[in-house]
Length: 334
Image 1 (tube, rainbow, N blue to C red):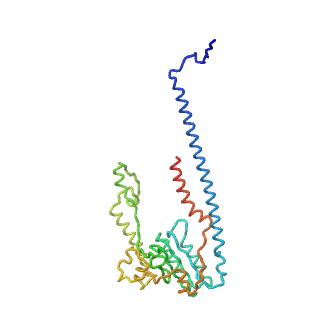
Image 2: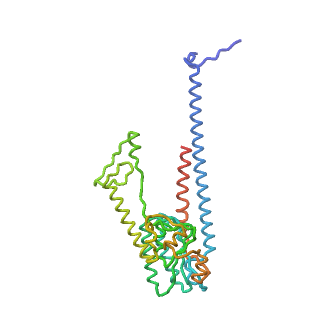
Image 3: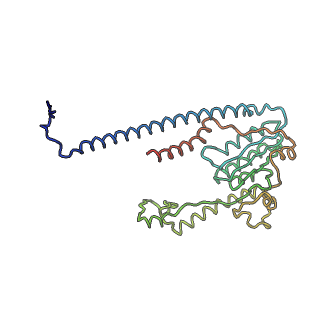
């Protein structure tokens, strides 16, 4: 006996037998793809938060270790042995996560107030940076030197790998500058620049719609052509800042500069330690160890550089890394 299975559509077969199966297959594929994407998103954020917690833990651990291995700032005045105070000036001058002027001012005041300090060394290793921060730091150093003149404590700068541009601007305020023969010194100049993308826009057929009140308000916009007047303004601005730099170096170095023998000394070029000594940009060769031992005659070194707070440490090293990580991860996921 044979049985016939009756469907609810009056036994009428579909017009296209494969259509239903195709629709179901596409729907299933879309569901699975969306689930896969959701899993990747969840995995990304889970791993990101794990990485954040690890970095926070490492930052706390590093901060705790550095605190246990160095002398707290409020205990520096209690050091009973004669010593040389060392202050580290590193990185770009005017870095948004660090106030070098405040750091130098606070460190110098702590050193000047300690009767056991026989000399101060600013340990410099910086390619330069902001002319405003450099000039402010230069003036603060000179003010403190004058304020504590009666202490008769020498202030030296010891350049390590590089002390150029804004770093040398600050160094010029010291009594003397020492460096290694292979150090990179000088670069007494000012730089400013950008990109001119107008040619590229022309090739792409893109028009810039920039609305300004004032003929020079959009000066420096890479998508707008620079006028001869704007070029002249930029050149004058750079020249004015350069003259301030030159004035500070001459004020700090005085007749030690050998300008006649080195007519390009203010051209912005950089010198090796050997060349810098011949040009009068430095006074001699040395490291923080040789200067503290042989010049200051106080070989014991105490670091007066303030420690970074946890927030500063987290902000400086983590913010940029997380931002870059998010951008890189996002480009792969989304």
